Image 1: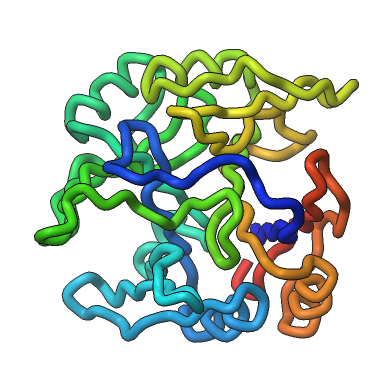
Image 2: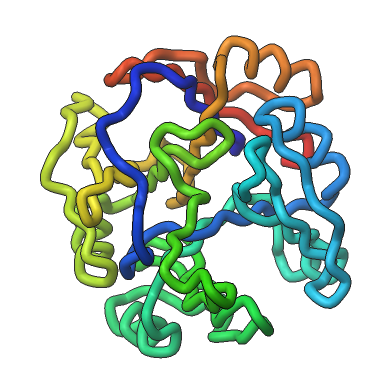
Length: 269
C-alpha cells in the first residue's frame, strides 16, 4: 500500500532530540520486484530518489529525501524470494536493545520469528518477526555511524514532508495487539476515537510522541502495518498515482486533525 498524508496544521509534537528509545520506528523498507520502476513512481508521488544499488547488500538502495535525509531503504525481491512467498510490501523497523532477547520474548508472547537474528556489517543486527495476530515487522539493534551515536533516526516525523508521518496497525484482535506492543515496546494506547461499527481507533504514544494507531482489520484483510508518507497535496498525489500506473484504494478523505489521506497500491503491487 502507498499511503500519503497531506501537510496541514503544524503538529505540537517534537521530533526526537537524542537517541531513539526502545520501541521507536527507526527505519522503513520497501520490498519490490522492480526497484527502478518503484523509483520513478515514488519520485513522482513523494519526491524521493533511490541511491545506487549496493551489491554487497543484495542490491539494497537508500531512499533519499529532497532535504538530504533518508526515508528508508529498498530491498529488491528476486525470483528465489518470490518462490518462497515474498511479495511487494512496506515494513517498519522497531529499535531494540537486544535482538536475540527480543525475538525470544516475542515468541514467548505468541509471536513468531520469520527471519532469525542476522548481522549486517556496519549496519546492525536485525530480525523479521510477526506479532501474535500475524502482522510482520522488523526489530533492529543499529550500529550508529562513528561520532553520531547520540543522533536519533529521522525517518519518522509527524510533520516533515517526504517522511513517514503515521504508523497504523490493522489487527484481527486490537485488544490483544495493544497488550502485546505495550509489553514488548512500552507503547501506550489509552486515547482512542470511536469508529462505531469499526470499533476503536487507538492512538499509539511512545515517550511523548504519537506514532500512529491500532485498529481492527477490514473484512478479508490479513493483519498488517500500513505507513503514511507526508506530501504537500493529497489531491495532486492522487492524480500522480493514477498517471504513473498506481491504483487508488481509498480517498482522498479528510481525517480528524485536518490532514487529508489516500491509500493506494503502487505499480509493483
